[in-house]
Amino acid sequence: MIEQIEVDGVPALVAPASGPAHAGIAFRVGFADEPLARRGVTHLVEHLALFSTGGADYHYNGATGVEHTFFHMQGSEDELAAFLTGVCASLRDLPLQRLAVEKDLLRAEANGRNPAAAGPMALWRHGARDHGMPSYPEWGLPAITADDLQAWVRRYFTRENAVLWVAGDGVPAGLRLDLPSGVRRDPPAMSSALPATPAWFGGSSGMLVWDALVPRAARSSVFAGVLERAMFRELRQEGGLSYAAHTGYEPLGADRALVTAVADTLPGKQNAVLGGFVDVLAALRVGRVEETDVAAVVKKQAEALRQADEQGTRLPGQALGLLAGRPVREAGEAVAEVRAVGVAEVAQVAAEAWDAGLLMTPQTRGDWVGFTAAPVRSEQAVSGSAYRSLETPGERLIVGPEGVSVVAGDNCATVRFDACAIVRAWPDGARQLVGADGIAVLVEPTLFTGGAAAVGRIDAGVPAAVRVDEPARDPEDVPQPAPAPSRGSQVRRGSAIGGLLARARRAVRR
Image: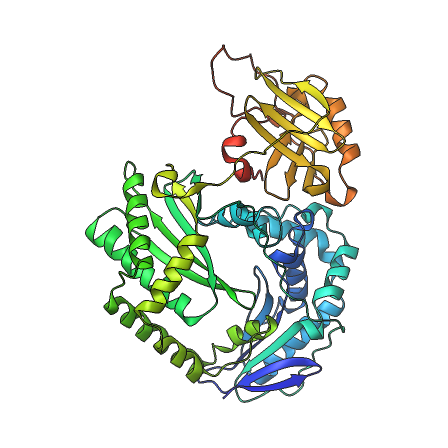
């Protein structure tokens, strides 16, 4: 039985658990709340808040996600109280003398992290805003100040925007949650960079990735499990096309969830994997669902819920749900909801998921399977002064009062100043602008006639709040014009627009 109480004004969930006691505190703030020009601010707060516990012997952790940040530990009652009390005290008085060091640690952490197969999906679905932020590096770190951090804490790390959970005998004696007062912050509304769905874009790896926004419900979780079983059977066991084929289910906000499917491919088998996956999904959406698959998934998920309830590991999920405005539910209710899912419910979710789907193809096209190509270029260029490319015939940089464009033939990439999410600025004059829709423009002044003047106009037009100054580059990294290609050759990938337009929203430069 989950008990709902308050501790120092913070809503709290308490339940008995077998094994070691564990507890945590979650805040309704994550990557989706950050503007791109301050990307990394929440993660930085998390690191600073944990600094005071760095010498502790007990097991603890902190994590920043799309919509939540939490601090968690396992240990004795005294250790639980000391850890959570210390975290809240650190949030009240961040060790700002550590700011430069923690920024370097975050950069080192990012350099050691392997890119996820589904990494580009959020960017293509949402653009460079709210739920698109997980696709971007922590580009805002150089610009984040002590004042930014303190303002972020005052806004999001408050009593009203937090939930405590304790799995054990009860609230540890001596626990003190000394947090500032504030208000509950709803998750940001999801934007969309897709004019139509189902949509596709071409991936650069041999991985197929598909995702869809679906209702946050047991039937959607069961659908994800059934889809995984069908993919494994058709793509690996029977087709021999993929070695790894799996799915994931991630709740978002109060009533939505993201189902993701990933399958690897062999060279020369990309179209076969794509066709096989689409066939699996199409069969599910028209009701060709194996009852044995549904029964197996329902049994597995019901058992997992029971075990999680006994161990107290359901509490973190319930805490995050409470922050999103969902009621706390006992395990029996959740199990009953899962057991009520049948073939019809799975088919219903499959149909909804098909309509909302986004597909990253494995180095092939996706229009032949009935998906619409996601936009990779802007509809029109801005009006203004034009600067000729020194290495790519016909390519022009245009800077006007409303924004900046790079144009080559029918290809156009435009970032308007009033919809600019970030401008990364290097001392040598290079500028990378990213629009809210995810379209990016990289300006290397050495590659255009009058490039320095163009950069001056850009700097005068962009809002100061979105500018992030980068450290100086090695002079050898500053591009110089190459000999002009012969007539009829393709746009160089090293030019300002070469490669950019083919994968405009993937123009993520670290």
